[in-house]
Each structure stands twice: as C-alpha cells, then as structure tokens.
Image (cartoon, rainbow, N blue to C red; front, side, top):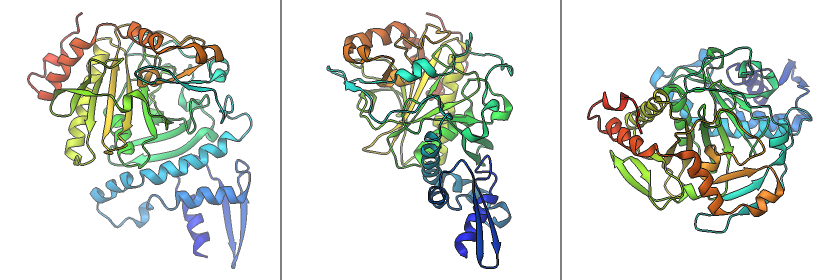
Length: 402
C-alpha cells in the first residue's frame, strides 16, 4: 500500500511534470491502474516513477526553513537527471515525435593530429531539422509569431523544475533534432518570453545543476545570436558527450583572480575559461557566476557573438565554463556546411555527409574555427581582468574597439 500512496503522491506534484502519466484509484486494497498512452507498458512507467521518487517535498508537508529547502533543489539534481534520461529514451521510441531517430551506430572518427577532434555523421539533422531563424543582432526583440518554446507539444516537456533559490522555473524540453543521446533544451521562465541572451538566473541554474550531478559526460552549451543560435527564445543545451575532447585536457594560463583563465597559446582555439571548484562555497560560486554574466553582458553590448561550453573535470569534479568569442556575425545557419557553434569549438563536430567525415582534417578544422573567430580576444582578456579584479567597473562597460 505504501507503494501506491507514493505513486499517487508523485502524480500530485504538478511542478515536476507537464501532464499526468498515470492514474491510480484505490478501491479497498485493490488498485486500478490506467497507463498514459505515451508509455508503452506499465513496467517502463514504474521504472520512471521509481527513479523520480518523491524528489521534491510537497509544500504542505514542508517543515524545514526556507534556506534549507532551497538547498534541496541542488541535492536532487542527479535524481532529476536520472528521470530525464528514462523519459527521454521513452519519447525517443515514439514514432513521429522526434524529427528523426538518432542512430546508435553512427560513423565516427577521431581526426589524426595533435588535438584529436571528434567527428561523426548526422545527416538527418541537416535534412530534417526545423529551419533556423534569422536573428540579426545581439539584443533582439521577441517575436511571438515565430517558433518559440511556448508552442511545443506538451509531450516534448520532460520535466519542469522550480528553482526556488533563484526563483526561476526551468522547463526541460527534448531537442527534436538531437546531436547526441539525451539532447535536451534547458528553457528558463518560458512564459516570460526571454530572448536568447544569457540571464544571471539561467546561468546560475546551469552551473549549479552540473555541479551537483556525478556524470562528467553530461555537458552544457549555449549559442548566442550571431553564433549559431537557431531560436530567439532563451535556452541552453544539455548533451551526453562521453568522448574525451581536446577541451577536456587543454592547458590554461591565468588571467585574473585565480579562477579566470585563457587557453594556452598552443591550443587550436582561443577562449576565456572560468573555473568553479568543487570545494567552492555558495558565495564563491555566486561571485564567479556574476562575473561570467558581466562578461556576456559586455559581449552583447559590444556586438560580439559568443558561445559557451560548460563541463566537469573528470579528475577533480571542478567545473569549467568556457566562453568563446567571435567578431564576425553569422546571421543564419547553412545546415549542409561545417558550422562552428559551441560543440565544434569544444572539439565535437557533427557532419552532414559521409565524405566529410572521411576527408576532414585537423588543419581544415583549425582554419575554419579561426576564420570565424577573428581578432576580438585581446580586448576580451582585458575586460575579464577588469571584471574579476574590480579595478574600475566603468572600464568593462566601455565600447569595444579593434
């Protein structure tokens, strides 16, 4: 009987799910179970329910202080991820929900050379994905007539999380044109119609979520307008990338503060890297999140498109937040070409046809990346110093000049 009570209480928690998956009616000691048609069988649904468990205490039962209750969200990150994975795989098996079925066996290759770029075939994405929007500046207006995440089918919403600490509602939505298994869109405060510009709350959620899971294969990314963003509605990407990428072993040179770095000059790309250590307390994490956000705001105000890649270090559990900057604006994607977004900048390169997978070389990758990066980094490194050191707050607000 306790099991059925737990299942029934789970289903009452409207903050986790977008719709009810199961109805349980108790008639004496005999339960009648009605399985939502989106689940193929009862066993799969119970697996989902067991993993989720009672992940969030019901508000009526809350006995802890608000400070303690806020920390519960962080402690449940791994359970949210486990539930997300089960639900994602269930939906991936449903005909017609995804634009295509991600193939288990895909042509993959590590490019010979110094850096070991990972390339793999994903022809379906270039042929079947939704046409990217044209977002022509870094402070765009929200256009409700265009596709946005208010328009997704309710089935596509994996989880809804109330982040009480940052007073932010997070919708986890499937990416219908996935690059990897579990490819999910992290969409903060969807109903507020936020444009594709990083907010302090959304950045804090992403960093805290990754810090509190024990799976370094799960990475996050962000593309700004002009740097391959496809939808002008705020979102980050969550992906499963078990490959060892060049970015995982890159050497760093300190810029400021003992946590803001640049990549070693021998690296194939340039980037700013903020290190959030596993031992950092809440105030230290907040300071770093605020400074990363100050940088992205400066980049937007100075019309510098940018990408972000967030990943755990397998040997230390430290979190690294890479910010890549370019001085050339890419208005829309050519879905048949070798584009450069956060994945490619981190060393994971999906390609549209077999010949490209077989013939791409390390030198071509480096040339392509450097061709879109341009010459913005000297000014960016200076701004990072001003932001982190707090030497003169007006300096990092000054216009960017080449």
